[in-house]
Image (cartoon, rainbow, N blue to C red; front, top):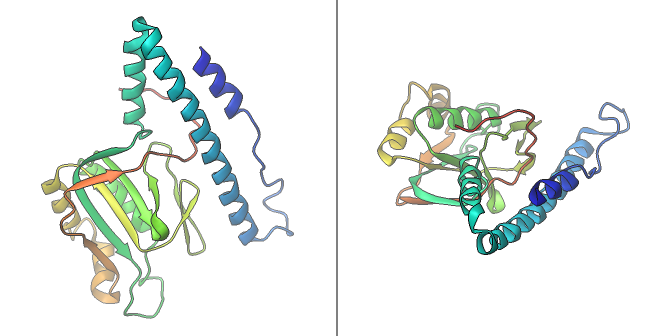
Length: 226
């Protein structure tokens, strides 16, 4: 009940939002900047709430022995939706703009490429995925994740991510390696690798892979974990 009250209070606090996204006064760049600022505020608030929950859970473990199973169940569900850090065997894939060709739609990495790869890996049994961009900005892929673009800017969970992209994939290594080498399923990417020198390859030596926890927006009205 205490955790529920804390979540209800904090998630209902209003964050600054754009009043009129269609107003001619607000440029596309300003919309992007406002989105990034709002996202950072949200992440700070989410981190604060998670810290409060962790403190309450630790207290519960020591003072309410009859609730230990409940706390363990919460931890398990947090792991399933990506709210905890994780490390397991897997691969790291690099996707980057071509450095050998002039910039054109086929020589750069797009948000749609990342979406295709994420879907492809999950279809082949991936357990968890995160995307890291330049500056070590890493975003965990979860049920809530959005992968979009504004002009040439890639937004993952509302966070601006720029190439080179490192796609960290947890799962059976042999299956993941087979998946990345599937030139039929990934034909559009491999065609651009061959014709436009788009950079797409797996990093060697990465066996145990670490993923950050999900820290983006989490608005769900109806959901059920199985």
